[in-house]
Image 1 (cartoon, rainbow, N blue to C red):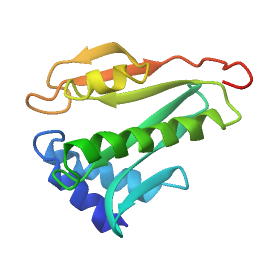
Image 2 (image 1 turned 90 degrees about the vertical axis):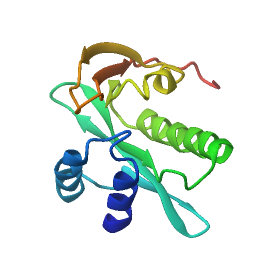
Image 3 (image 1 turned 45 degrees about the horizontal axis):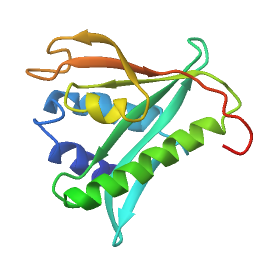
Length: 149
């Protein structure tokens, strides 16, 4: 699915990603993408992707390269499908044997959405991901859920 993932990335440039970040994406795909990196298929077409990884030394989970093909879904479908996909990523993390916080590196454009999932902004670097793309580090604290919740 490498070429389709690259196409999704490019469809989001320069609005959500700096085109120069293609090298970071390719490195991630070549060295870190595993069964925790998932894709979203709609009508047989790949329209989204993303996943998580574990940093055991730092005792955190990371969420990486969550993105959807721009203009492929329509606003209402995008919100519904993105919510289902992101809930699946969080559910997969909850099943991991580690009880670590979750970090995500994102931009100011996605901050509000991730706050709805319980992430809080810890750090902001102005233009850290390129011109007009601030680098935000957001954290979701690990919470033990009572049985049946």
